[in-house]
Length: 119
Length: 396
Image (tube, rainbow over the protein chains, first blue to last red):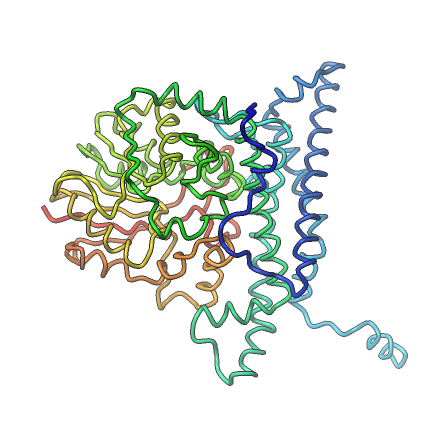
């Protein structure tokens, strides 16, 4: 540890250089940062849970030091990578589906509804 | 499903002698970011769809013509809601990477500085010079959104900047640069062994070495070669020197020096090189540095610059635009201008005959059993570890 630097505050220091505004309302920029940070922490907790499950399965008990020392083998590493990938796919689903929507022309359902009446 | 679809776990990152301790949850944060970056690289196809299907048609309707350059495309795309959201996510992933890297480095800075001192104190292979100023083009902005950039210190004499840079490369590239983030340096070793089998350079000069991750592979491949690695950033050099020493690369001398004024005699080196460096300079510094490099290069010697591909007239404007993303969204202010330069003419102006020049493609050399190959799958434009080497053999 170190006692001379407030490492939590300094970790979040702003980088020099004006940040681009991505949305008209700056609150959306800020909210997206918060949502992504929360998503990250959920992913971290899920990975920690996976570690705990694997340690308990293997040994029946654990210490916090065991969690810190845990290194997944190739198979476990790949399984955990898939968990994270699938989690990211779920939180980014809306973005991904918007991308798919860009590839096709689609009528509003209301228009389809009208058309079906006469079909 | 192939193994390359999922980034390797952070535990695959190699721990050298000054590598920070990474706690379980800190590694997990990098794992999340590696996956986010991989997903966003895949989603870049959406930018092209948005461009083709609505941004370009709207531009044509408004202006009665096509965009003439990548800047017009950028201004038009920056109004597109899908591109904005994608960019906002990508910017956040960079900022989160910095916070996680700095958090883990700064909480253990006492131990890290102590470890670095063990390798650095009293060594002639680390030469720092307080009189070397941070160049204006480096001081203007924090490159890659790294608070403090390569040269910032949280307290005098620390290694925080170098350590933070080193621990997070994995997340940004999804493991694309290998266990030691040295896929670029490994690629150089691989290339030279094929290009000039048996050649052993007497002296190599690496300009803008940062933490030395791309010069250590050459030092280990050529243990008899005297290697000088220079940079203006002392915190990166302190960390880089300790890192190299801990890995047994004892033949590199790290010197704090500005490449615009090299303190070496003419023809001193058989190989002068840079890796992913030229795009972090400025319009005036770049030709000056190439000129200095040519001056200190011996007849028959090799000049080599590893970079992302230059924008040529053959490259579609849309690709130029998407390759420019880091310039405007990840604090790389010279990136765009640099990639449009005619590097060949600059090398010719520096004194290398045009017929001595060459361009060749290289990709990161990594342990492909664990780390993803870089020439397969979706290209992460501007980030993929697939480079062009702009080089010359100076006439003997």
